[in-house]
Length: 142
Ligand SMILES: Cc1cc2nc3c(=O)[nH]c(=O)nc-3n(C[C@H](O)[C@H](O)[C@H](O)COP(=O)(O)O)c2cc1C
Image 1 (cartoon, rainbow, N blue to C red):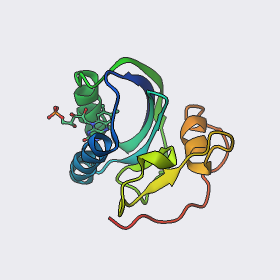
Image 2: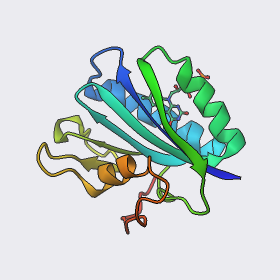
Image 3: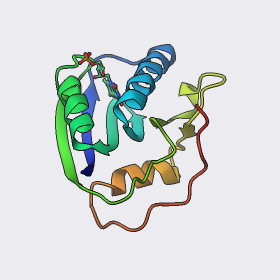
């Protein structure tokens, strides 16, 4: 069964650009193997992540996330069955302030302090199962 899980957490350390880039690169490789898609938002030391996939893949990743000391105060916001993925094109899209962009990074969506990116809004909105339709978003080549 296809499911979506959304949580938020606090970064245990000040994540630098390269550190985040490495985390994402590894995450995307594993997500590809697990059939996970989703979106990670990092703003002001806080993560909000939306992950989608088959229940077994989600369980495996969730267990890993819970024991990962790089973040804490992990709060599960929602988990529910879905019929369609919102982030089907991304092994893990990433939104943050422009300063976190690493040259050549695919699937990066800058967030403005005033106007939140549609992707970040979709990620937050996903914690309510029936919160609108998924937005038409560009595909990520990875
Ligand atoms: C905020 C955050 C988001 C992460 N997202 C993912 C992810 O999407 N996919 C993934 O495989 N690992 C992700 N990780 C890393 C996992 O927590 C874990 O270190 C990795 O999957 C290896 O799992 P293992 O330690 O059980 O072998 C993330 C870590 C953090 C701190």
